[in-house]
Image (cartoon, rainbow, N blue to C red; front, top):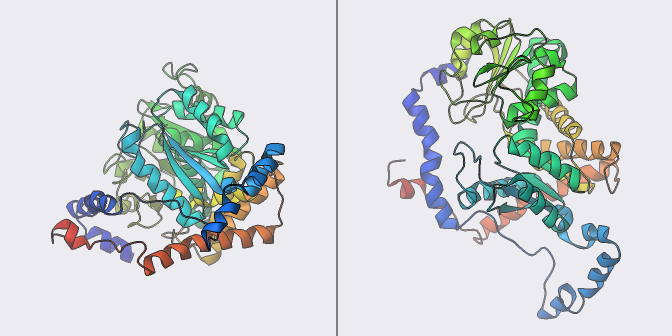
Length: 463
């Protein structure tokens, strides 16, 4: 019996829930202590007040005139090249749903923090007091001159598909929706290595996607773009298996799910969750938190050497040990305390690092695939096994490599404004990411960022 399984079986559900609640108990006091998570800091040298004659008036008029003559120079003479807007209307926040733009701010600040620490990207939370998809797209257009990229976040389905599609059409900077493309990128990376371990060809295998929200809809499109046969994908929504005879799946209500209904599920499978598991090689669930959203007997009905990604948080759709007892060979979840965490933070910081470093005009699904393949390659090179199919967040060396893969794909697809060499891109990414991490360490060491209060102080000694 694997050691991790022994350890997990000794943990009760109550203990797991208590562990999951601990960050929530700490979060509000810690947010209040720091009064937020990100700030703006100077990056230019200031030795005396006289320097402001260069950085501000009268000297600043010179770069202004250069940019007026050629707006593209805003990427060279300002920090626009490294600015990303994290845009949300607060309608689909984590597991909280429609909580509004003000309440979404802590999540968007957290996203900005991850952008900086993992990718060296200067990201700004922008929470909008509108739910109108056209207004959201219009805001993105209006703020485009300030930013090098836009990360859409926590926007409800199906509106999120429309906003992403229209913003990508209208803007000349990368627009990305992490709930779609970010999740799809890391899922693909995990599947690539999982299928290597079980010795199957993923492009010839049957894959069931449980949940037809933003994550799995985009995952389906990315898998198809990567080379998986559309007919080998089976999608399941709250009403059962998606197929082309479903009258409730309409072009008007959800054109993206409707399109997938026409091209997936070649065998015309019908029914619900139990039928969707039968004889398939892999299941990717991004649905309702468990446990018992997925039953052991359904996993037992899968093909030999089955792969199960149970990505719901805070509790996966099925406990990992139960999936393994039912016959799954590889199990991944969204949790860091179980093996094989599927974590979006492995994707978006480096992908934006890459597209920003070539001043790209867009970010495509092909760039997501390039990132996924590099993530899988990094893990394979340092060693993969059934409980270790993906890089971990602390393996920071993966981020520059992933950034380079995306940058090179941008150049290949003709959407890069500049074309550095592979070595130049790598050195630049390493320098920027290291700078972000080392700057934080220095600020903490010098006490400019205060030490956090002890957990016992916050939790009243209850830990």
